[in-house]
Length: 293
Length: 262
Image (cartoon, rainbow over all chains, first blue to last red; front, side, top):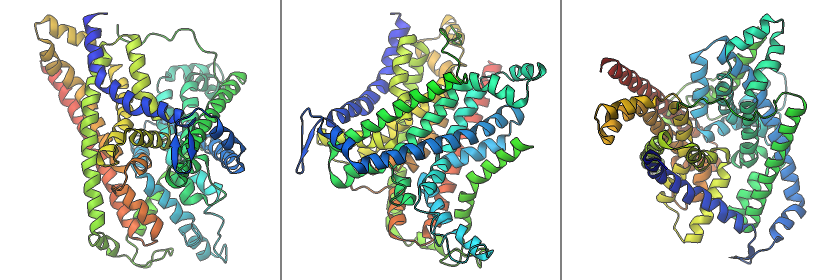
C-alpha cells in the first residue's frame, strides 16, 4: 500500500464509517428482524420463518404486491418511454438549457406538493372535472379519476420522470454523435440508428433508469395513500403500516425483503429480455480505461 | 416533428400540475372553477397567522443546514480519498456511499427506526439529521465522481514538485478545483433535506418539520391554504437550486481564471 493510498483510506473513513453505521448496520438489523417474533406488543429475537410464511399466505399482501408490480412495471415503462425521447432530444437534437432547467425544477419541487397537485387535478371537485363540466363534456363529476391505480401511476410517473430523464441524458451523453451520423450515412433510418447504436450503448443507463423507477415506485407509500384508494394500494403502504400502526415490525421487515426479492427477480427478467432481443449487448470483459493514471 | 411534439408534451405533463398549484394559490374562492373568477392574497396572509407553520419552518431550516454542513465535511474528505484510492478502495467507497440512492426511502426509514429502537435512542431532530445525511451523501458522491473523472492529478504532482506542502497543495490546488461541485452539492443537500418527507416520517418521533406539517394539513383539511404554502415551498426549492447552480458556475469560472493567471 502506497502512502497516498493510506491517506486515501484515512480520508475515506469518515464517510465510509458513517454509511456503515447508518446504512449497512440498520439494513442488516432490519434483515435479522424479519426472523424475529412478534408476540403481543413485544418483539423477541428468534430465528423463525413465520413472518415470511404469513406474508406469502396473506391474500392482502399478495394483492398489494401484485398491484405494486403492475403499477411499478407500467410506471417504469411509461417513464422510460418518455425519458428516452426527451433524453435523445436533449443530447443530440437541441442542447436546450431551458428544457433541462425546467426538468430540474420539477425534480426539485416538493414531493408532497406534487402529490397534492395531482389530487387537485384529479379529484371529484378537482380541476379536470371542473373543466369537463364547464365544457359540457360530462354532466356529473367523474369519480373514477382519483383513488385508482391510474391516479397512482400518473402521479408516480410525474415524481420519478425527471430523475429518469437525468439518468438517460447522462447515459446518452457518453455515446458520440458521430456514431449515429455514421450509421445514418450507412443508410439506417433514425429509428434504426436508435435501436442499433444508441440503445445497445446506453443499455446500462436505460435498464438502470427502468429498475430504479420500479424499485422506488414499489416502495413509495405516500402516493398510494393519498391518491390510491383501496384499489391502488401497494406493498410500500402495507410495510409502512406495519411499522406505524400494527406494530408488527418483524412482519414488516419480512415484507420489505420479499419486495426486495421481487425487484431482483424483475431485474433479472429485464436483463434476460434485453439480451434475448439483442438490445443489451453481452457484457464486455474489460471496460475501456477512462481513468487518468 | 414528432420527437419535438413528444418532448414538449412531456414537459407540459411535468409542469402543468405545478402551474395549477401556483395559479390556484391566488384564487379568491374556496373551490375550483375554471376560469378563475377572482384573485386574492388571502391564503398567503393566513400563513402568517399560523404559529405552528413558523415553528415547522424553523425546524426544517435548522435540520437542512446541519445536513448540508455534515454532508460537505464527509463529502470533501471522501472526494479527496477518491483521488488517492486504488480500484478496490474506490469500489468499497462506491458500494457504501452510492448504493443507498437505489433504495426506497421507506427502506432506509424503517431500518433507521429499527436501529434507534434497538439502541434505545429517542427520536429527535438528531435522528432526522442523521437520516438526511444518509440520503444526501450518495447524491454528493455521484456528482463528485463525475467531476473527479475530469480531475487532472498532474496538477497536484506539479504543486508538490514545486515544493508545496501536502496541506498547501490541498488549499491552493485541489480545493479550488473541487470546491464548486462541493458547494453546489452542499446547497442541493440543503434543498433535499428541506423537502424530505418519507424517511423523516419514520425517524421524527414527535418533531414536526415543514413537509410533515404540510402532510398533516393535507390530511385534515381541504383549504387552499395548502396551495399558498406549496407555492412558497416551490419557490424556495427553485431559489435554492438556482443559488446552487450560480455558485457552482461562479466558483468554477473564478477557479479557471485563477489557474489561467497563475
